[in-house]
Image (cartoon, rainbow, N blue to C red; front, side):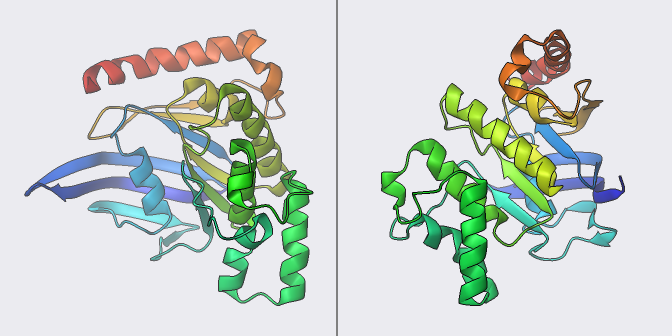
Length: 258
């Protein structure tokens, strides 16, 4: 796999209350094409800031961020971004919410309808095409948001705690579906989470950050097979050992942040 996203000696500071606050310092990180990389660390350590820089929403204070060998442009259209909030428009149906990026891109109506139908089938929302967000469960809303994210087929998904608000059962189900879709569509994924279980269950690599200003404590390759059964993973001794090792790396950073 070749390098797709590269952070080279990246630092980012923000002006707050008349002073500059450093969010991250000296971050060197490469995400290879087709990889699923999770970022974990204490709150405020700059994980979301890295996603924003990969998306072209922030520029680094120092260092350089590259995408496919070139400096990240303003608004990197080769990425898709999903946060904790699904941001569904309440006056639009499922199919109309999914249509938003296609409408912006000027897709012909016939092609747009075919693409929306394909996405609805992919995320398991058949029969709910005409439903409004208020009529959907939490899991259905996330499926709709994921379908909208995939609508224009971005090659990289930037996911910032997308399942944090879901209950344990729904969260597990969405993890399974996300992993299956990303592998099937050969997506590159940069995924922020505070949940070590989630990080270990999904990732090809887990990147552990220190407290603010965030620096990389460790970059750990997963010991689990890529074709993994997320539903039954928690009973796998290899998974238990891998997760425990991640906690050993993260615990000092959490204590430092407190």
